[in-house]
Image (tube, rainbow, N blue to C red; front, side):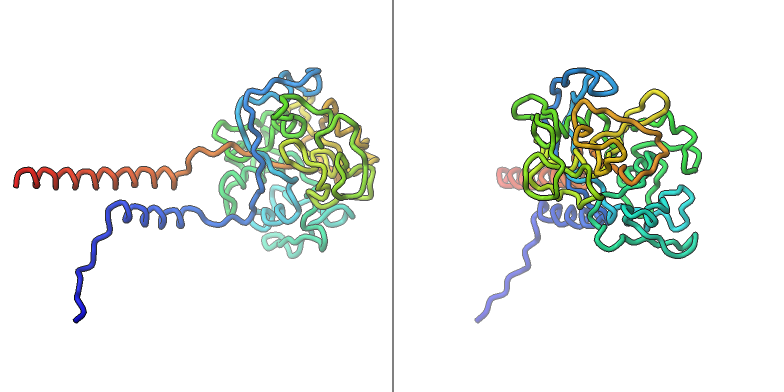
Length: 344
């Protein structure tokens, strides 16, 4: 004869796990743009010499661990940004040269208020170009704030004036609580040239002191996209990563960094595919600091992003707190049972 048993109540800690899991599922929606990050460790590393490799002192020395994108921001990633934030495009996040120029990778359709964007065929994984310094800051603000309909004007940076050229443009610096941002020159430089295992710097960003060879994409070491016919897919030079594992910090497109340069210019580094913009592989060298006007948009200029090493997220903190509460509740129940047993 079958026996019946009363359903057993879940222990408090299992209830806490279930609640935390449910909250986590709600709190962590999927993002349209997913960045593949590389962690840059070895905090407090020594600066490189000579000092004038960078615009400011302490070249390549970074006091903290951080993350940087393994690849340059691509057309496909920037299209997600445009479709989320540029239906009318009052901030000029889209440059028409992205369509008209042979090296641009994004087309726009429709009329203002209903613009939509798509990548050109074959350009999905090529680096976005024709982005100004302010476009790059707004992309990082949007990423920092969670994407979707999030603000482009606050977050990692505070941009004032509500126009394509912010009224505080020459003064913009990173906000203290920024989570995703444009790399500083020192952060960019360390990711490109520093060998954390040896504690030394290379002269070129593919882990070599010999000048990088301009070549077609492939697995050959110390090669890059320079003096060529155009942009290539990010990461196509599979044999030429930096010591930390980033790609294309030498060649493909120059990349914006945060550095403010005298004359209201902003820093760029890394060289490009375009020989006519003074880019041979010599421009990949550690000593080749560069700058240009922040409003510039060129077919050989793009960006990559960086991020803080995250503190425990709100979901994790909530889970930890709730788990602690469950443990405390269970311990309290046991204590009461022990008291009852001893009094019986």
